[in-house]
Image: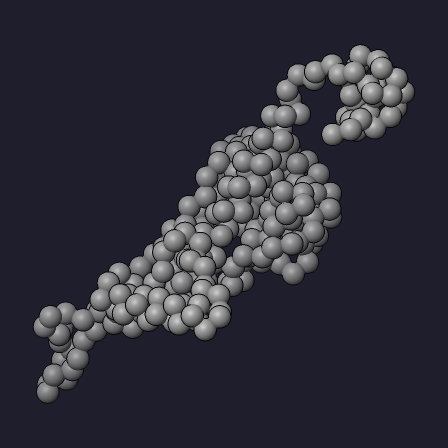
Length: 282
């Protein structure tokens, strides 16, 4: 076949435009079908037609999970946010206002293997113009600092293993003071401690330490640090709870004596006697 021969999508059968072919290992895929794949999936070029069809079937089934999803917690200030359904122990990452239109992958807490908070520091050198208009470095050199807070979630999933998004919408600028400037940090910590003691003596309640146990002098930095640590706590704690529940369900059932009909039996999934149907005391 020639370079400009007509090509058709091997999934939907539609004609593929000149620059619209999303090649697979053994077939062709149109833009419309490719857009239905998970946004976290990056192995399309090395996938077979059968593998892509299986993923599209999964993505179609995912719509039911999205429809049943109810947001109880939100993390992030950027256009992309992590939403949590605490009751169902599931989460999604999306930038859309309409979840059902976006169809984000619904991930169970039990699929989470690790959560990392990656804080990127960007350092820009400050310069000045000399009398000839040339830019010169200060001696010693001076810098301006900014920070971005990225969450990396590692998951056990058939189509991807990493989900990454940024918590902050704009870089957190700290001017010419690095967040690791302990002299600046120390003064703020002392002021905070004194304020807490005075508040307690006046009948107030001292503030609890932020999640993660780390306090810094910049409030915006502290907000995103706490948010990232809280997100880690929710996902990792939820993972442990979900896995413990799965292990309990998989454990062999033990026979008990029904206090109502006195039969020796194994309770059903609702905790009722299999003979008389009475709800067994917990």
